[in-house]
Length: 117
Image (cartoon, rainbow, N blue to C red; front, side, top):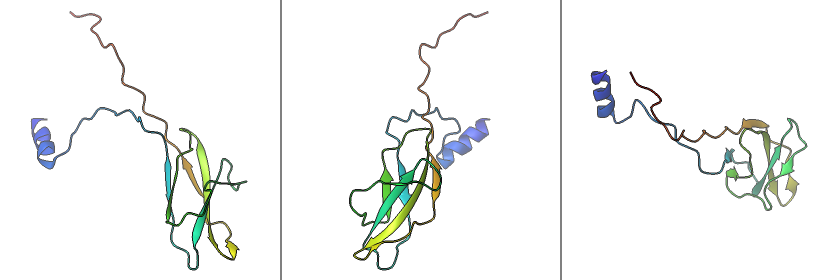
C-alpha cells in the first residue's frame, strides 16, 4: 500500500477523495456544428421525447453552444436546435436526451464514538 501511495504522489493524483457537495446550480451545456447560411440558432427543450418543444432563447444564439440554467436535478430533458437566417427557421436537428444528475448529499455531521473496547 505504501508503494501505491508513493506512486500516486509522484503522478500527482489522490487515491482517496471525499465527495464534494455540488453547491452550484445545475446546468446543461449543449453544442452543435455550424450550419451553412445560418445567422443564428434557436434551442428547444421538452420533457417528452418528440416534443412539444419550448424555445429557450429569446433571440437567436450566435455561437455554437448554449447553457440551459433552468434545469432541475433528476429531471430528463429532450433537446433540439434549429438554424435561422433572414428566410426563416430550419427543421429540428437530431434530438438528444439528458438526465441532470442528482446532487451529492452533504457530508454527515456530528461523527462520534459510540463505544470502544
